[in-house]
Image (cartoon, rainbow, N blue to C red):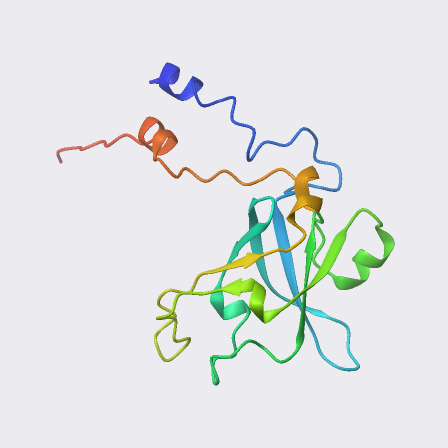
Length: 157
């Protein structure tokens, strides 16, 4: 059992070398900016490739119109603090605006009316090459790690 797990211990995704500022460097914070106010954290996402972020469709779409939110949306990468003010003091934080044509959601997503079924979205970052310095979250596409880690334990009572 351990040897099967050990074979996957050298994966580079999901591993970090230190936990200074970047506790979870693949975490993306998504902020909504309204006129005259400080941007507010509304969601988070996960960096799954150099140019792709996995998140919820409900972060980007208005429940009443099912259109991309009218307010400006920003994402920050590589920061453990959620408060917007903390971004002003750290120059290592990458920040960019999100546009509607960068967000892909399932066609059947229908927000609250559809009970948030298919509530998933991918943000395609046009400048993905800049994100090479951030480690990616691990996704077990082939179930190789899952099969090695999970065991079924049936107990008769």
